[in-house]
Length: 234
Image (cartoon, rainbow, N blue to C red; front, side):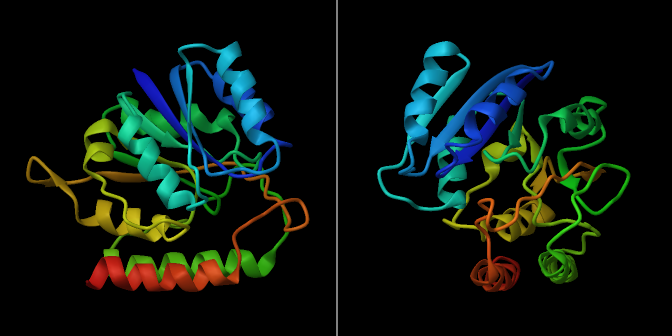
């Protein structure tokens, strides 16, 4: 099974080499597709070094204008060639050590889509940012009310798709609205007349503070509410 890992990157000079090393250390046949969303902190120089060190494994696509995570994923999905497509952030909040757990429901033939949940319990979690957690849970609840899914973590980075699902996702959101958009679309997507089999598994979470570089904020929460309404009602 070939795994396409999509990694949007924006100003992650401190972490990008470490996360790439961890991705490539996993026991899978990987193509790593990195989308540099106009980083300005020296990230692109490190990406050039990584491509030279891992020829044929890492491909980098550079946006000339910063567009956001959704736009980066739109670029990445168009380039993926693997049997399974996985989304990986470029910071160190999510660990590739969880890949075996994320991929198992697909490998076993149970799932078409797998979400990695920070709220199912059982794995290491950094204890901080209470209101951020509450916001995530409220957005997940609102999304579930429209999709009729019982997800615990709609906003998670770790979303994994069988290639036929990934090929049918047409991402419209440029920024963090991509999370509720993708969730709304897979909730109603059918393949061969059958609804998708969507699973969740517990994952570890080593969350950053805003001082440490966390980028998502209150404005993105309001955008997520709009996207929940937009992609479920309209």
